[in-house]
Amino acid sequence: MSRIGKKPIIIPQGVTVAQSDNVLLIKGPRGEEKFTIPNGIQVLIENNEIRVQPIKENKDIKALWGTTRALINNIIKGLTVGFSKQLELEGVGYRMSIEGKKLVLKVGFINTVDLDIPDDLNLSIDKNVLTISGNSKEKVGQFAAKVKAVKPVEPYKGKGFHYVGEHIRRKAGKKLATSSG
Image (cartoon, rainbow, N blue to C red; front, side, top):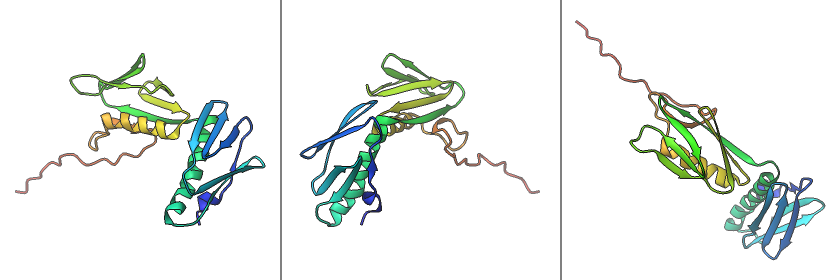
């Protein structure tokens, strides 16, 4: 049995959920989203709650059960509150800016790195902190990983992109050789 799949999802005020065939249409204050229910999973909407249940239990359906519940919960949370990630850029001379629909990164390469900003994400820069926000947890995390992959933090000086609050394991640099003599 799935512990996560058993939990009901409480529909918050201002959110409407409609089901037709295998598609859930979820509307909230920040927009609307469609979710296709996988085969073998049943979604019941009653008393301001959503319950996800397997139609039959086998190993594959059990794996989808909790995942489906988590995805529906993330859609509802994204349409009410939203998701955001913060990346910090460390390094002397490293800069980032937003020019139109592009994120321009100057991170020690000969040329600048231009990343297209997806339409459904909002970016803001405050000094050396980039905040990525949007309705979809998956898209916010994917774009944050794409930005971080441009210049991952290096372990000696800590230069590069890292999440705010992330612990960076530092390595010791070259040690001075002591001469015994």
